[in-house]
Length: 350
Image (cartoon, rainbow, N blue to C red; front, side):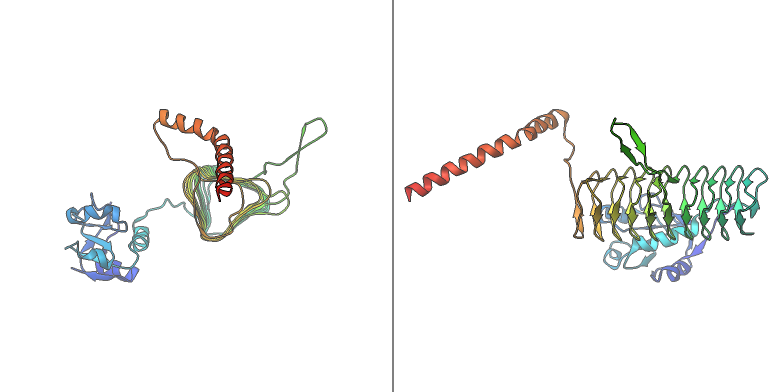
């Protein structure tokens, strides 16, 4: 079965690009600069890949004005090639689609409301009082708890779980195995040291156009809701604790752990394997970028890029450095004492 095909001119209009070369060139897919063939379009959005431009066999390349001089073929010239590539890529995506209606093996509570254009797949469960909006796709074995609300055109992929009362906005994607609204991690030690569970009475509110990766977990709030604002993109295997707020259009990469009551500003980027949490509520300002594996223990009040930790090294060298790190406090004390002695001698000489 043949896939979609577009002329270069049609793609140029889609992304408001200047078309260079033959506008009737037929594009049937995407490819990297190194591997694309004559009916595919590629892009150059990083100088690291510029070396592939002269040898590329792509039918067309999306690039900026500066890089055009290094390419003699068809091109779409734009200020932001990566954004243009992202928009064009959506034309060639073929997401799975369920037929409208409720599969015979699904279980839907009598008080649930299912829009006629929604699709409830095999083995899916929809709880009492749940509200499923138009064009929602609920794939196999997904679970939507009592009182949940799911906005228009949202997709719940196989085995995703919404606990009771979770609210999801329009146009979201909840990937396989994601669990939204499980209890937050809250316990109070009594006089004997036993841990008394704190009832988690809040919920989870997800905005519109949010993507939650496979295996990601977002806990419900203890009293107030945990909130993920519009446009947030969260990668796989991310843990977000109770009462957090994730600001609009922020990006959280894989294997990040965020403790309870953390507030992340708008347009932040949290790279992979970061850990955020400490004593008291932590707040990150808008437009904060954390590089990979950064640990944040206190609030960050200013936008910018932040890092922590040490880079990898051969094990023997790393062990020596670790031992020296343990001796830094003593070394600092000796240095301070030495500076005082030198300062005393200098003052005596004067």
